[in-house]
Amino acid sequence: MQSTKSHIDEQSMITPALVARFGRGAAEILDEVKLREKRAQLALVLELTRQRFERGENTSETVARLAADLHDLRISAGSAVWKHLIPIAQAHPVREFLLQDPFTKWSFEKPRGYSGDAGLLDIIYQHPAASEVVGAASELGAEIFAYTVQATTSVAARERREILAREVDAAAAISDKAEVLAVACGYLRESELSQSFRDGKLGRWVALDQDESSVDVVAAANPGTAIVPMVGNVSGLMRRNYDLGSFDLVYASGLYDYLPYAVAVRLTQRLVDMLKPGGAYLFANYSDEIRTDGYMETFMDWPLILRSDEDMRGIVNAAVDRNKVETEVFYGENRNIVYSRIRRKSA
Ligand SMILES: C[S@@+](CC[C@H](N)C(=O)[O-])C[C@H]1O[C@@H](n2cnc3c(N)ncnc32)[C@H](O)[C@@H]1O
Image (cartoon, rainbow, N blue to C red; front, side):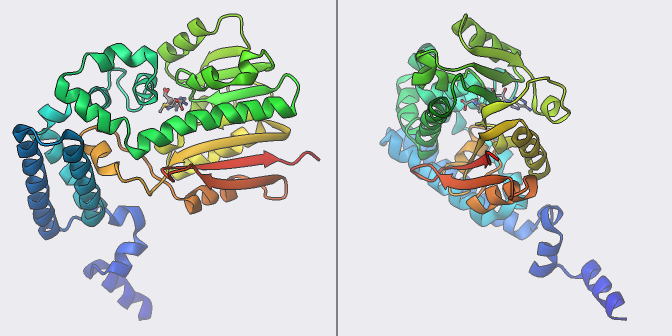
């Protein structure tokens, strides 16, 4: 009888406990009252932002306020309601102001057809290759860009690039002619910051990405060097389609933010398998502490899977045999990106 009763309760009563039991699927249950309330709040936020732009108020403050309000709305709305708010925000006339920012525009329009391409990273990195796109912005666009490119997530991405270069240099300091694999390399801009690469100390630096045009850019920029550009993808890696051998260092940056848990675990397993004894695997993920999430998901149309240090440990623990590796999880300086390093024990 007990089981019949709880079955009936599950069918008929929506309680927080029941919602929790249904996990992700339960997040789809839509509270219409809450949706109406949050839609009204969103309309107010967007209208006030539009008015601030029209009045010529301080641009950085206007965008910072908008980003903070969108973050609060995202958190308070919950995922089911927030999902409905995203297209409403994207269709609001205020976007005509925001899309003058070259960063927001590139992200929203997706010239490569997907989010987070290497060209977008060049804009965030303030790389000379992006200067034409950035320089073409209107006066207002340049002012908005001054905010978005200095937002904490952008600062964290630039630090990530430095961390990757240091990781490569550390591998080169441990192993003569170190072999490195960059998964989802984009334009491999960290290579420009690596001293060991400049000094010709690396054995090979395999740069793998699914985007052929990005791999072409890597190839054109690095002829006759240790860099081995390669078109390939996560699924090919997991299926062992590529005969790559083993590495002193493997890393993935700007990739796990798109991978659901099960894929993240399988990819981690596979890449740790490719380590030489003593070799390290480093992967990064935007953390669930970022405050630009609402702005990114709406006006940049750039949704990410955000993870905490606990989430990172969860992936590691499910992927590896703890007796064979040493693991470490750490945040970057402003905690907007979280990293996990897995080092295979030497013996
Ligand atoms: C945000 S960028 C990061 C680029 C570079 N790692 C960095 O940190 O600047 C994401 C890159 O992941 C690549 N990518 C996305 N999904 C992929 C997949 N399934 N297999 C291989 N590359 C992938 C994209 O083509 C893009 O170049």
